[in-house]
Length: 467
Image 1 (tube, rainbow, N blue to C red):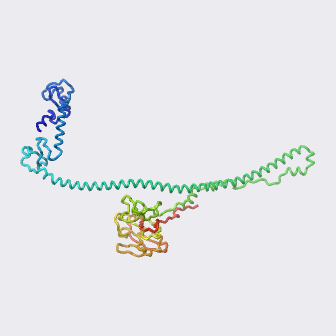
Image 2 (cartoon, rainbow, N blue to C red; image 1 turned 45 degrees about the horizontal axis):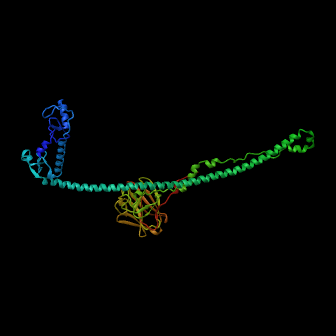
Image 3 (cartoon, one colour; image 1 turned 60 degrees about the horizontal axis):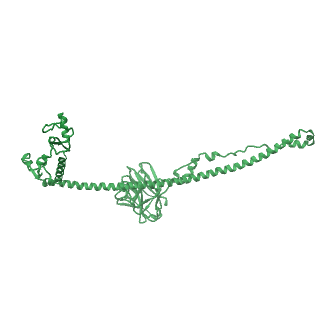
């Protein structure tokens, strides 16, 4: 094998031939090695025998090239396994591992360059490394599973984003269509009022013009008749009294009527403003908007994001904001200052929770909705309404039959959360604590008696229009 390697090596680079060419003297070289030699010597001579070549471009040595390729393939095949690795210097099997030099060696390497060194068998030297690599491969496989899991979640999120965009676009179009319909009807009503006024005033003006035409015709006839008779004195003397009467017109002169023109100011004055005043009843204001990205998959949020009800479990991305540990949903806006109030219609729901939650509450693992865990809430269970002041302390605040609407008031500065029953007209419970972060409205609903058994009530008076 060593002799074959030497036979197939270029005399210049001492490596296996690459694109070998043959000179007329019979010596072969790598094409690039020969060209480099000729460039350095400034002459076309053989690097071995120094005989001048008659050709600028020597022909390829096809037989030698094929032999080199076969040798490389054979050597590559023998190098594919650890048991077939050969020493590049002695072309013997690398059967030992030199501990001192941290490399594989053959028998000749040991006797020549590695005397007095320590050696391991290949299997013994590889064992601890294989164990570490196996451990790392196990960790890598776990890492792969993690990345695959996040890839699946990302794919799910991408599909959900597209679905959200389509649904939101449909809802936007639906809401604007309501506004368009209102504006179309308002436009039709105002144009109808304009046309009615136009018709009434046009008819009055037409009647006025007809009267004036009749009077003008009468006066013109009197003038023409009098002018003819004045040309004949006899005719004047014959009807003196009649001519005096015909030459007079005793009806009062016409007067211009006020308010005869279209009342443009009434139709155009503050038009958009007055339409907005009428539109406010069509545009309810909700002091709290539910955030569907925080809703538990077992909940259904209404299209206007104002009510929540149980629904069959749906497949939703488990994004960080989602309350997967509770059947709850948060408001879209958190409060870190001021006083805020909203009313919730719990109706005849059997199981519900209403209150506020800190921004940092655990959303993935269930815990009792009490101040210790970041919640200030009241809830209904077994026909009784409770308030949790601590994990081991629960107060009964009312019987559930008479409670249908609850007002929640959050005063961030004073640290108060007040629950007021509109049905009983009294405060059900007040939490008092120090807030240090944003507080979000919180709603939990596991009732089944009505589709929208928990609803945030609108405040139409939010939009104030004064004329």
